[in-house]
Image (cartoon, rainbow, N blue to C red; front, top):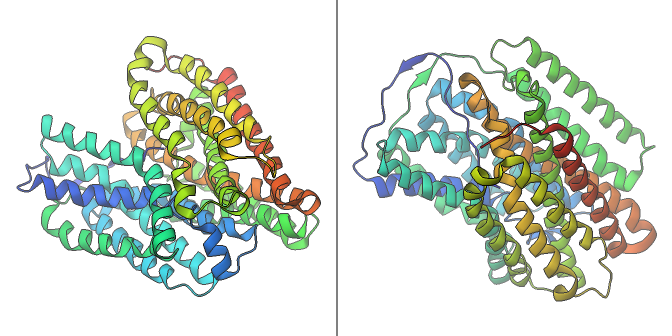
Length: 471
């Protein structure tokens, strides 16, 4: 999934048009390094999860928090980070975010307990939420309009698209050849270099008047954390557990408060009018559901490959290459297909392919092998996802008012991160219940059944809600 950004909004205070940078190669390297780190960190830990579980004594269900802690704070604070960049200056907020991200990575690498690691991952996500929105804006500030800027944007987009794939492979290499701790330590030298070079080689963006919607950001993040916690706790304690019920109640109340805050805020972090359009609301829902299925697939397949098939971390990471390679390749073709067939037709072509791939994974058993049971589903999922994601993005951004364009694109990324975290929580809850009765492999199969349902609902939503052409 490609990284989105939040564009500036408000009344200019200072600044001017983009200036031609004297060292374009270094400037672009700084921006791309940041982008690669924050995108990569959403997936780099997946292959390391079995080793992390053994080292820090995570439960099978609690292990999902290693990913969720990052995704929830990253996705939940992304729009607030973009707004902070509008008001305070993109470079300033970018550098602050990288500093927070780098220090949290260093702390996480030294973790000696589960709580320590989860706290570090949450702070990493907050740092990423500050740094990521400014990356694209800094390209427009530091590269002159025309061929120079277009080349920079092309490299930036390719890095964003490849980040998830690189994360799986790099996570396997670092875990296999060094230690799981290096999936975090690797950010430290890169982050330190970015911190040294950014103030020298990046121009500051213009600043804008505005307010930070702290109440909206806090209620949305805490509400989602409460719901995710409820699902994961239910996997072990059951749905009748008092703490589980309290967490669900808190989550619902906080999210209701979030909607109320956004409805009244003069400058909301999420303009609710974005959901007034039926097609856009359907596309956001589809993005959330597909992220839920995709993150869940990564989480359970990585553990199945290592714990059941005996793959090394490196081999497990490389096992995803057919999917990621096809996803990237087909996604490169999608811009040529949209003008010819339209976004809706492509969605309705790609979603059944993804559905077939996920449905195939429900047949996993203790005797399943990679070639016979996993390669085919990964190929189908990669092809389908490569077709679907661009049409969804175009539908979300089509017809958006100029003042809402940044919020619309930032909310897309938020849906991906939050959808992945919430979907994993649901699947972990299903897995925990099913595995108590039939073992881990049976629980994995049941989790994939629910993930298949996510994709099926996304297909139904596309059929029912997304009707207008988006090209």
